Image (cartoon, rainbow, N blue to C red; front, side):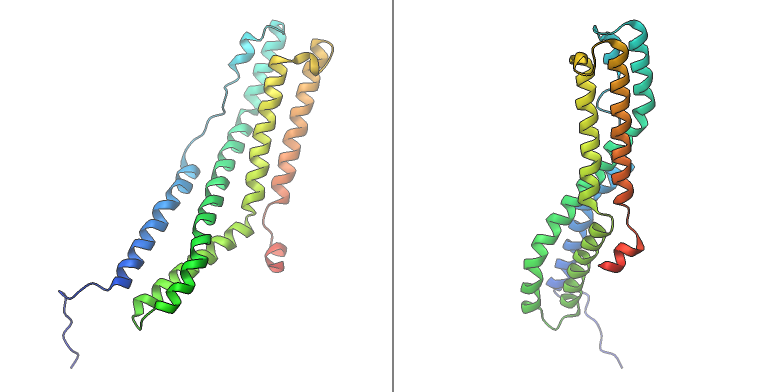
Length: 205
């Protein structure tokens, strides 16, 4: 006959530590989830072109229409830059402490099942984070999307403030601006494709 189990005994500190770890790990991952689910807007809606004194009315309309067409791309860049940024720091913040904590836990672990469960949980959590970080090339993608967004707004301010740096007259300035935006979009798109995880990449790990 099995011995009776006491329900009013002291709580296992290892079980408490495991519960706290899981709660904190989930809580600190919420910003990544929120970045994924939350809608984003570009830093500027393109309305500044309406007041651009350097251009004619026809040119301002073309610039506003062009911004409307690229708006979705800017939203995509901004959203994914924020997702990759938050996951990058999430992995960083959990990986560094775990490299110190796991050896200590291993030395202090008792025969309690929960102590072994805590060590396994911490190790698995770290391993999964690092595997996802490498597989999805988080740091490279963050850099590509963030640099693309920043470069566009540098060009955006340039056409507003110093259009003469893009050409000697209005048609040349607009043509240079549109061309450089196209080049920038192609550059970020190529970076995104190059950073897409493949089976070959995983096989090399």
